[in-house]
Amino acid sequence: MGLLDIFKRKLKYQHKDVEIWYDLSESNSDKLIKIDIGNINLPTGKIIASDPFFTDSIKPFTRTISPGTYPVKVYIAEVEPEHYRIAFAKIKFRPTPASNWILAVTNDMKLEDLTTLKEGEYFGFPVDAGLACFIDVETNAKYLSKMNKFYKENPDQNYYDDLLAEEFEKYSSGNKYSRDFGDWNNHVIDNASGLNTIMFASGWGDGYYPTYWGHSDSNETVELTIDFMINLDEE
Image (tube, rainbow, N blue to C red):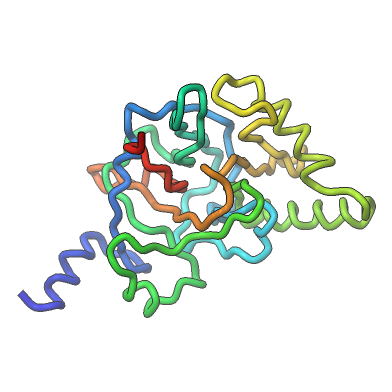
């Protein structure tokens, strides 16, 4: 069997981007606590996964989904007794569980770079604030405008400390699997249109995290999943 034959077998489904398959079956593990944390409005279906304070530098994924409102869920691991961390975050486009996953890529991830990835390697997004989010490109434009206006009007304040922190605490601190300051939040950008971004703690905090499109056995795209690289088998 030649290299071309191997490549064709790897590309089980044909899409515009390179198909790089990863095993994310742990995200369906019974060890995880699944929590619905809100619905995200995706008016264009062009999605960004990012640290919420760096969405200006992250491109949307090359694939799109049908515009609409979809549930976001976090999958929480108990890493020590009474100590919980978010292991995965998912937008669920369909309730069907995913059974296979491919790396979600943006236009910044060049074809020639993707083909050099070795087993276990990935491209993702950087986190520097201990938070990640899902956001639509249309929402992101308004979100960045809202933050710019905030800092222009409040030059001595901080968008997280003086605005988001209270939202996080109100939204999720009462959940037994959240820390006292809140581990997830539905941040509404525009009340009239319902544009929002769903934010959540990024596993152990700062790092570099991959995102995957999850497919069902019938090849439907059923989810978009961020992996926060928490080893569920660690004692």
